[in-house]
Length: 340
Image (cartoon, rainbow, N blue to C red; front, side, top):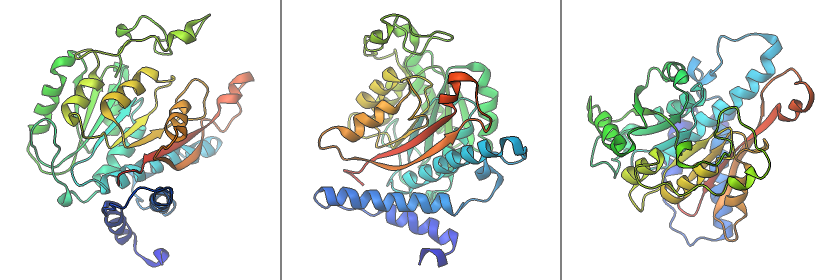
């Protein structure tokens, strides 16, 4: 039946289905049914290439046959990012809050913003944090390399975007609120590009993949678990989650691409942001975020489920030596389905 429905109707129907409330008692059967429903909607969006504009293609204009396989694989990640961002936004009764750690060149930031922009804004309410304001989707994307900022902002056109320094951390929520209140246009997407780390390396003297051009030596892997919990005013991510979410609301969606195990970042996310959906970009690479999936999925009695996964090919040409082990990676999308 779905094959005969026009794509705009599919988009609207997906929002209706995803936003429908189900207050049934949580059982394994119910979790599996919710998983199947979300997976079907996501795969339908990705498979049918609902958006045909240049933005959804992501790599339009690149036609080199030598790298076509790489483009196809990266395109798959982009479409999955775009479609799942839309799907999460559809299911929220209020404006959606999404975080990205980290932006890199901003390619997937564009996918996140594009997906959020396709949600029916008229059905959205208001964020509960940072006082009341027009219903507007908010994407918080972090990047510690200031040289990448022009690329990120360029990728995010035509969405409204604000560049904010993470420091001083204590004033970051206020500066974000000012950005939200300026140019009061209801609805839409605001992308706040935070220049800095979610867990700055200055907080902890131990190295766990955060120090540039540094590799683990000796017993340093044990030091990954010695970093302290950041206090207020030390972590931009903690301060923003506390200001936007309070003690009860949850972060709607986080995309993790930390190029490291991301232990400190995940600690802050789990403790202060409480994400409902997680997108792991390099779940299969050594010393990356695959352990997060194991933690969420394999905890006894867990209501987390895998919604989708896929292959990422970083190059169509074999890499030399042991680097070939890293040429293929995989992305993984997870959802906590206890609450819909």
